[in-house]
Image 1 (cartoon, rainbow, N blue to C red):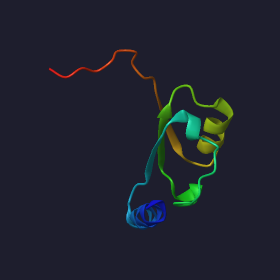
Image 2 (tube, rainbow, N blue to C red):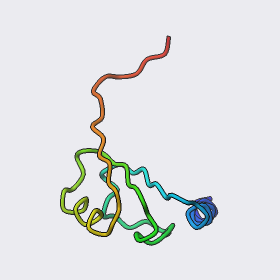
Image 3 (cartoon, one colour):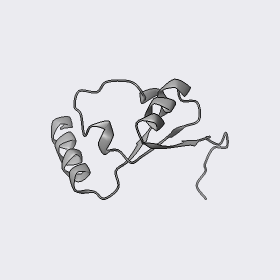
Length: 79
């Protein structure tokens, strides 16, 4: 269930040397049902290039490295 997953993620973040969050840009600034770790424990956030510039600036100001990714418009196909 979601609570178990959140607890496992929290334990992994506590033990990790580097905490990387990969999140769709629409998730930035939103609250979830559970907090995995405080922002001061996050080292890197990877998100879409369409993210809110002010939120990205806030993350950077908090010492988080933010990597923005522009998604390709190509669709993937299997051979």
